[in-house]
Image 1 (cartoon, rainbow, N blue to C red):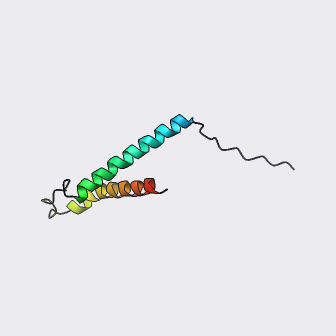
Image 2: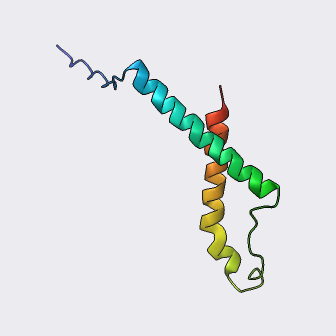
Length: 81
């Protein structure tokens, strides 16, 4: 009985220069995100708290908080060696 050989995964073939460009773009994006978070930590970029008392306001902000958390996670992953 013959069994079929599993298909080989297709590997993306890029040149060293293309890889370096992608790495450079990733490094630039990570640095920009670090700067943005630093501005937030330093109090230069702050959120408007004037509507915190409105009913349902916190729940409406949840998607934005999740996006911010995802950005923090992405930066942490990019910083791993």
